[in-house]
Amino acid sequence: MHQTSQRTAALVLAGAALPALLAGCATEAAIEPGDAATSGPAATSGPADPGTPSSGSSEFADGTYTADGNYVSPGGPSAVTVTVTLASGVVTDVEVIGHSTDRDGKNFQSKFISGIAAEVIGVPIDELDVSHVAGSSLTSGGFNQAIAKIMEEAAA
Image (cartoon, rainbow, N blue to C red; front, side, top):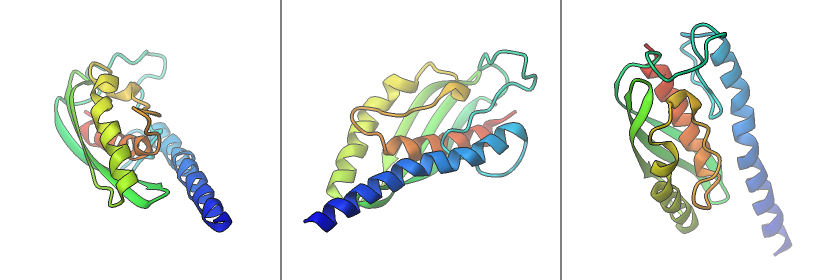
């Protein structure tokens, strides 16, 4: 029983460390606009002029975009498919499909999916930084990773 607790704790820590590790990649992506590298979950895309506040306006092309995001949970590797619709850089619609294979992962993804729209609809995509939705914190890592990919694709 003690080994199981240690293994679970190690997996939780590994899952918690993954967004921080990937955030290091995001810093480079934010510094190098137009870079084709995939950004991590904490990635943001700022305005072309760093002195200009983000308004969520013409930085991103209007449209519907889909990307996958991966993360590690105590049940193993998991993924989500995120589809967002943008208008003037603002999220107007969101759909998340979970791809967990274990019961607990499916449960957390389901809770995340039921609460994500309230967190992101009406928010400029470059201001999204989801960390905890409806009791699910690990799913947000996959969601943020997918959003970073979408931001890269939608960059005007």
